[in-house]
Length: 468
Image (cartoon, rainbow, N blue to C red):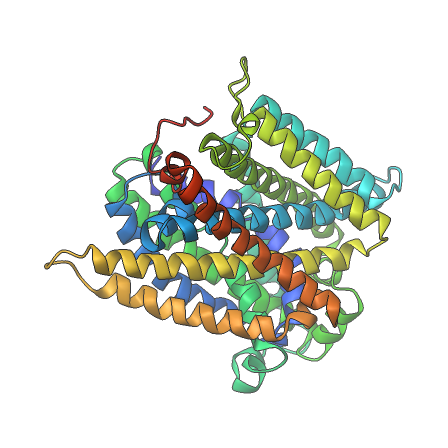
């Protein structure tokens, strides 16, 4: 792949329409209100800072190991395994959140657009889960050409929406209130920046494809900066137009009354019923791509940790015919179904649940970002040649400070993020950081009782094998 193909591959799994319809309204509601566009742009700058270090460490560690490998190399295997456990939790929560959104999108598409049966959202989630599980089991890859087609349609749709709002002057004229200090620091700025940083999830995937691109030393930096820059401009502009589509005050009312429908209602207002129908279809296809991506990423973590001997060996068995990590995929499917069952049994609101789960994904993603930023700085400083530039570690250190501040603010406002109070809030934080600690404890146990397995943490030894 060249830089353009790599950018398209990464963006296809970023879900632009999901971000617009499902993520931005929640960020406005729970974060810093109409200041979200600025949060997105500033977050993009710090992600770009971190990307300089990511590209630098990728040159020194030329393996497709991603965060797991870099954190192990930079902070040691104990923290590295903790990162592996944290990543599994992060992508599992992401998968659950998109199942909630995908089921809602499928229900809206079938009842409002196709005029089919009006079934509960979780029925459609189960259907989507079945399709994802089949693809994961049989390793039927989603065609790159189909993904690129959907991505092109999603990007075109967002551009059309932005131009439509801009062309009509929004609800009250195109205002710049979002860029004022009062708006930027309104509401919960920590939650706002947390959501904004979460929008860039997946940017690191460019380094994972290093074995599949032409001239990695040039292609990967171009693609990484291209992805970050495009996401910052696209999401920042779309968030700004979304605010203006209602007006600074009315948009807060809209996301408060119905965050799940605020964006689609705006689409219907500015590009008509046809645009609304297209949005319903693209939301489903975008959600499906994210489901498949998060399912496969979590499956790979399960497989690799099993192949390393950290988890039970049975999860690392490869299918004799399809050469797929079928047992790890089945385990992930079961875990997803259990999560869906909990949501249904507790009768949790699927629209609100998506936002809460997306928030938890963003929170755990912050933990991963902080780990990898610190790992990159430590590794680059320790392994710096006399003639090497200090710019990558310095910029990465700045991003680490920013992420740490946002993580602190998000923790202080955790009750707002989850909608829980008291013991429930404490319990959720204990679970999140308990998983982080469990990875460390597991590494320490293996270091003492099984040095061979411990040595494999971080993919240092490549003879464990991975599925084709």
